[in-house]
Image (tube, rainbow, N blue to C red; front, top):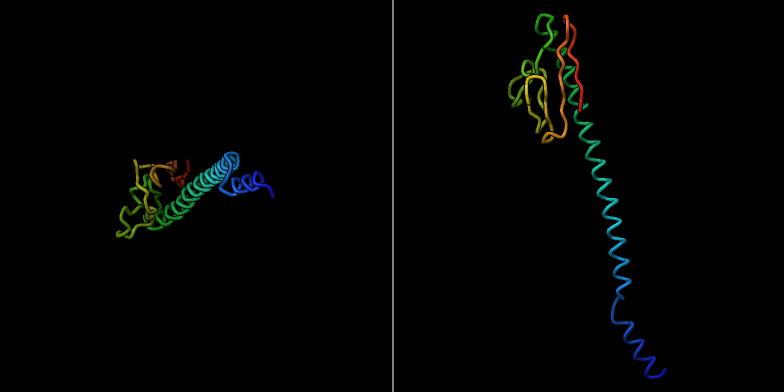
Amino acid sequence: MSNNQHATQIRRDKGFTLVEILIAIVVVGILAAVAIVGISSLTATGNKSACTTSGDAAKAASAAYYATNGGSYPTSFSQFTSLDGATPKEFVLPSGASITDGTHVSGNSGKWTLTMTAGVNGNAPTFTCS
């Protein structure tokens, strides 16, 4: 091996080239973007699931309220919810949820809203998620 070849070999062994570093940065950036999109999708699915579960619990609580209150349905969340969980009511609000007005429960820092529409002519109320 000549001196020139030996010097080239030593120079190559010292580190990465600029192109190799840029390729690594691009690959890490692409992986990060894919991870962020996946996490936001999971978060949205979790919020929808939390709202749907709360709606199902509210429907069951509404039926329990009907059975224990002489055949009348609640017209607002405050009639059959417990804000602190200490009062034995039919529907205990999920952790982090609050009643924003009589007919809306906002959960997970406002990321989902359960809306109660009072029943007409003695019918059961309906619950919708958004």
